[in-house]
Length: 190
Image 1 (cartoon, rainbow, N blue to C red):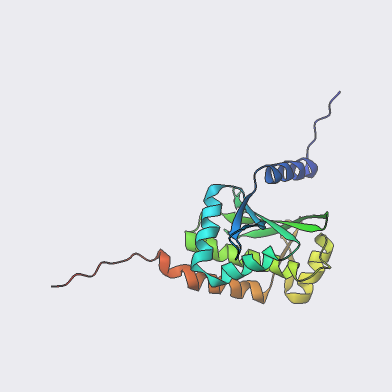
Image 2 (tube, rainbow, N blue to C red):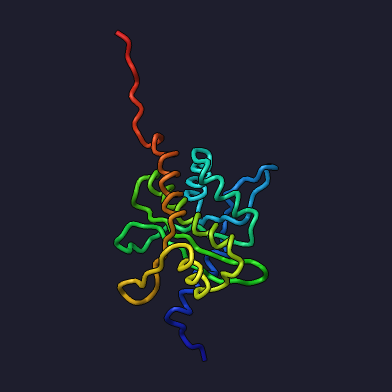
C-alpha cells in the first residue's frame, strides 16, 4: 500500500527533483567552458544572468567567484508572491563535498531590478562560499549573525538575513545595468 507524502518533505523532494532534472549552466569561464556552479531553471533566467554578466562587472565577479567554490547555486523564478517583491536564498543541503543553495528571483520587477536582486543574493552565496563552516541552516544563521543581521520572520517559520556586502552588491549591480533600462532617445539635427 502506498502512503501519500505531504508537508515539507514532499516540497523538498519536489524541489530537489525539479532542480536536478533541469539545471542550465549560466556562467562562461575564462577558458570558454561553462561553470556548473550557477544554474538556472529555464532559458529566460540563463539569458537574464548571461546578459547581466555582460553589463555588470560586479555580477560577473560574483559568478566567477562561485565557479571556484564548493557552492552550487540554483537560480529560480519566485512564482509564489511573498508580498515584498524581494529575492531570497535558501540553504538546501551539504553533500558529496558541495553545498547547495537556491536563489529565488521575483518575476515582477524590471529586468534591471531583477539583476540587482540577483547580485544581492549571489553576494550572500559568496559569503557562504567564503565560510566553509556553513553546512546547514544553523551554521548559516550563525555566519550571518557574525557578518550582518538575522531576524525572525513575522510568521515564525524562518529567518531573514542580510549583510552590508549584499546591500552594496545590489547597489553596484543596479548602477552598472540601470542605463540599459532607460529609453534611448534619437537625437535629431535641424
